[in-house]
Image (cartoon, rainbow, N blue to C red):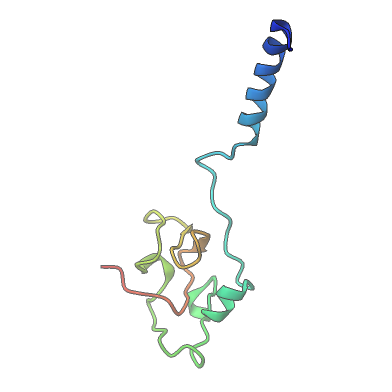
Length: 103
């Protein structure tokens, strides 16, 4: 049986361990690597002007992640979460073949 003194020593340490292991709610998601398999398959590029127009005929000038329905970032942000890429951060000036005009 543990003593009251041991209990009082253990509880604050356990609480500190739990708090230390938590990730911050305000932490940013990781940025999408253009070499990621899903990114490659969808033709994701950091700069829409560099999209492979021969391979992805759906690309048109003015299409970029910042004006895509899937982009969840704030207006004017350089990067923001994307619903297509599991919430990872994509470049607002980027592009991929999953682009859909924002309503």
